[in-house]
Length: 331
Image: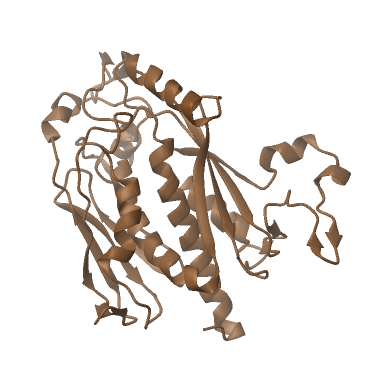
């Protein structure tokens, strides 16, 4: 399952320590202006090594459009986007060739496929998300002239809020050889009402699936989310007035269909599993081992997941928009 979407279909490719990573987009409408500069800002936000609180891997992540455009516009043909891997240090993972890292997909990939790429996790690495971000940037570029904007932010780290307090938590975890998780919130504004296809094509179900498909995400809330379980119906329901909805506890979706309000999504991001602190595990022979994961890793992955979440949400919205266009005749 390397392909996402029904109408705007994205197939990502490449491994963390391979020659390159990227994506092929099929189904992008023709005639849209598109150059590398429209995509690059999103990859710049996702790339590692920007601050001391991120992975030390230094990747320029410069995107190249290989196909699907002519004279700066999309043609309707598949768009191939590629980014070379340059700062690869596979030797950092030599000691992990025969050892399963706790919290990673090492064991499950070995069980399912009979082999795994131990160099940074291969396809299970967070570097795979680069292709998603590149595709999502194209989707955002198509959505923007239609009045749809997507923005995300980290709202909590290790149970604390506020930028300085969150940075302090990340720094403390890094210095202790550990890691922390966080909460990312993403909002879509300007989305028209009527998107989503019940009963099994509900938009909130598609959003939840897209967000859970991001490797470090362990839970998703839409609107009031888990808080809805603690409310009365009279508190949860969004009153409808002549001017519109009086509140937005539903998070912009009712019955799986958008209602025109902002779509509000929150993601629970787990602590980065690669940590220098000692951890118990086994090797491929089943012998118990103690390991410390060296190399370059984020002490908190939540900040770098923000553009990934924005772009995955954009992919869901453009897919729903194109589906709606099939029988509404939108351009």
